[in-house]
Amino acid sequence: MARSNRPRPNVHLKIPWAQSNHLTGCAVDIRCVGIEQAIRYATLLLDISDLNKEDFDELIIERKGYTYWIHFAVRPFGNRRRTNYKR
Image (tube, rainbow, N blue to C red; front, side, top):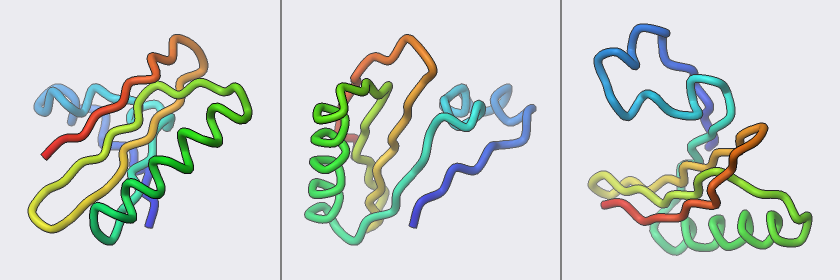
């Protein structure tokens, strides 16, 4: 399942992490079934990025409890190719 919900405009004032690419529609969160699926999806996204010579801003595998998801963001310019795993 992929989501790219834009938070309400005033949410970023209360939640620091909400100052993200989600606000501009440049990010998606992809829910995964376990860490193995997250790693496979992340690998595919990295391979596609390299193959097409297209940069991305962030590719982060995140976890809360037993739920894993990938945060993937692409900006019009200034992409950082930032990767991380957050627990």
